[in-house]
Image (cartoon, rainbow, N blue to C red; front, side, top):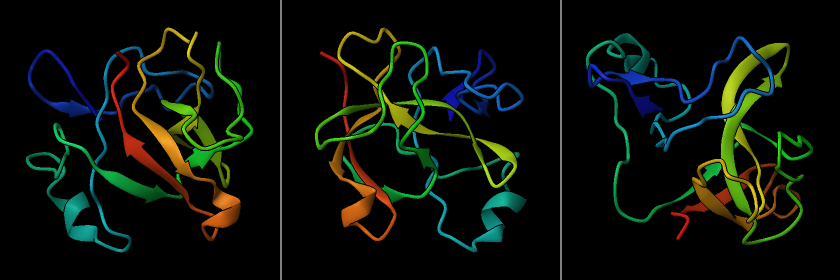
Length: 129
């Protein structure tokens, strides 16, 4: 998620266009699987992690996507960015691999690859220096 000029939370990338990448700093929405109350209050409140360091497991990623100057997710400590990905016939704002030469905002770094983590990608928050 990211903030618009009205201090509202919006998706970081345009989910209508597969492959679109976030052009601004974005932040994760914390929503446990099956928690529909978060969807019900989405217009007014959402648990967003703006600051501090965190580590997450996620299923919303595409390890093979190469978006603009990015790279497939292949190794620990690889940078990650937000882009629109297609999963199960629908588009989502999710994580894709990046590279140190990619000008897109970095949202985190891989700490555990999906093959060693039950199909989930583990990443730690991070800022590009």
